[in-house]
Image 1 (cartoon, rainbow, N blue to C red):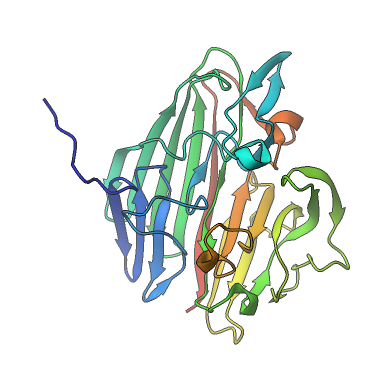
Image 2: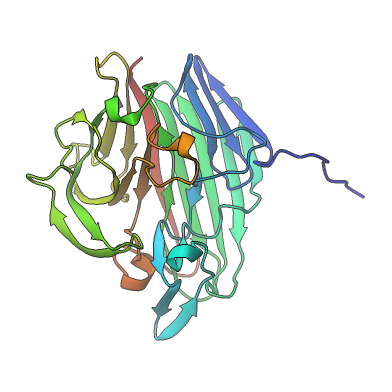
Length: 312
């Protein structure tokens, strides 16, 4: 009979990937990334192997990203109630796969494919298989998440991720941010959307890169400015521009959250890195239906984002 490992790391099995001077660590608890470094630069403000994940660091957010008001939504006239995983704000937050144990389906030195199955359950009565491919190549790191509906009826599905980026500045205030959002979400005190407005002429416009300064960001962006290949990108750089990284998203990621961490429970974590959250749908999307994919039985949705060093 198989036995379980005693004193297993809180983040599960550590899957190390290497290519040249790139080093990534994916983990089987939550299927996300604990570390991504190039040379001596830790680009992700992650967590230790045996540290209980806090603040969703590096986690994958499926089958919905961000917050859902009161954990409640309806599909085809049937009401569903999810557990309130952000109880203080009475929200359900960041999906159902963050604490599942993912299996290693395929692996080599530069790539790993992790897989989990979200079982049909109270509040989400569909079975969804999710894979997450973490891959290093000469261009950097690419993460591709695929959700496939194994249920007999259509299911609502969205995806996101929650990396925190740093260029090594002591505080994120000093970093120079470029972000593609032409509009931003207006939110209430529960972090839920109440409307949106253009960023033109506001402190939230980072389409031309500039220092973050003292601005507090916990801000959703839409109407992303796209490049010719359909991708959009957030850039973060040191004040002198000597070190710079971009987080790019594919065309199916229609929304971004930027988070300076001012309200994090641990004061030592506040404003030391920037949460950049690619999302296929905005907050509260299961309730509103905005940009939610309704996957037919057997249908799947694959989305990609990645990290690319511009200057090191």
